[in-house]
Length: 309
Image (cartoon, rainbow, N blue to C red; front, side):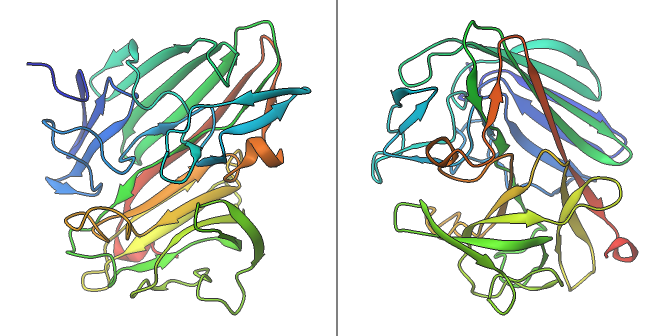
């Protein structure tokens, strides 16, 4: 019997366990001492709500699936048919191959061939590695075709600390600006978070705030990382998602549009190299010339009470 997510790659380091999957090269589970820190999905199910999926060659949405690059108009399939958008790239449901594997690490690869709406050839690699510092995820894209191509990437992990809902958790985010979107999820405007319900630069409870927002202007530390923290105030433990300087955008989603049994159960923190609708607007889209490569890195690590900033 083949699992819906294909082959399962089990990684271990100390008390940490991770399962990476063949379909989409995604992240299915991450546990520490048997405790889930990702709201993942069972082996007998497909990924739902984007859980743990890689988003390439663009993250989030493209309005009408239509964009222009180098003077040529392109029309992508509308994977989010209900809103008429192309969404989350082209590799979420394809099979990835093993390039390297060790007990604590696996590297998967996929060759993205030209197709309607994206007539470019891109070789993708994703490396998952466990260490004492947690999980590190590194994505590399190389343009192996004859034409320059537009490129962006992201990821879609949902954090959990074992609570029934995310409402009581504390959220700290380093974003200075928030984007507001229309009912199709397409950004309409952006504003400073100062004085808005979306200012989480100092940790505070999520409460009943509905979040499905893109944030921009991330403050990166001296190590080059921007970090989002989610903490359970009842015991002080938490989880951090960090991202390198290639990421100046992130999406935060409380899951209110998911089916009732998954709604507000996990908090999606989505590192992105460009904002929603970037192929239309051109904002922070990477122009990948033939033969050129680009790499982005993010990670997850558990936090003990004394580690919180």
